Amino acid sequence: LESCSDQEQETKKCEILDYAFQDCELLSGLVFSNRVVRLGDRMFTGCKKLKKITVPQDCVVGPNFDPRNYLTVERATNQDTDTVGQQ
View (cartoon, helix red, strand yellow):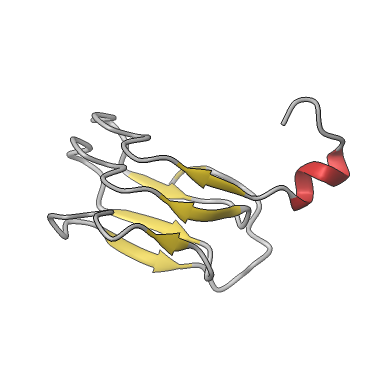
């Protein structure tokens, strides 16, 4: 994204790959930007403290996203969410 203009960055969509946050043991919460359109499988394997994430309303979640069903996945109601980071 560094090579994109500000206007291009605002419209760029992205996918988060499988196992992207694997073994991030200190991660406790996460809010994804409205630019995220897909979350990969088993993204949070080994994230023992993670209990809740917030994703955009239209974000596709992989079929094996959370195979243990430990996470609460909340759908953002405000589509203007434009930050990514820990809660």
